[in-house]
Image 1: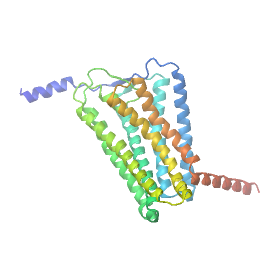
Image 2: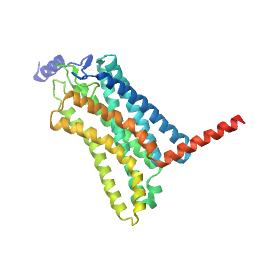
Image 3: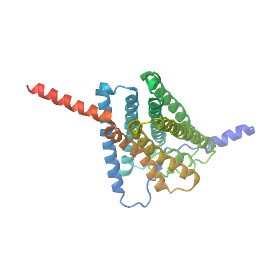
Length: 326
């Protein structure tokens, strides 16, 4: 037997793909029942809020524009992302079902990361809309069309699907011959691949690549777009016009802060210093839950077009109900 054959034989003998992982969850945290109640409340409100926003945009023809096509897409991915995460969390924590089948773990990991990446680039697409609207108002209807926005969003889906499939698929090459305890409440990428006992350098590189492409680059481009917007607004002579133009960006800026700051803080803390598993679990779960919960509230209450459309829908329903009675 040659040395290469011996190496392959030894690898096959030590390669272990576990049947199940064990999700350790929180350790020594009092009053966890309140967290479970919050998860349940957050999911119900996320489903109701995003479904409400989707319905308003769908049934109001005046909102069938490029901007609200992006808002519709964001609400849709928020709804799917929350559905991929929260019901499984409740099942794990409330019913104490800590064991998860290997294939289910990898699938769950993929869908959670996939929708986060989609949301990240969707926020950039909204920044592009605001950038063109304020910096190039006369060319807005040429640069921001339904076809352009659809092409951008389709590209994001294709890029996310291909890169994340490769990153999550790379876990299949790992051997888990030591601990199978995932120090999280769901199959997060780093806590899973760091359990492997063979070389994880490829997984580490892919994690950095995905982090840069789907978090750092969109955030940098959003920041640059708002630098350009600030310069354009500074050239407007009247303060009222400047304030009116800036108000169209406030909802988006709030969404960007809610989404990017916690997830960046968690990842930077995990790389540069030690972060307690409980802190990582809380920060990571809140990063996925809070933006999806607040996005429809922000766009319903802080966006004038949505409020006007909601009033018009209510008036239309009253008129229809009155005519039916007569």
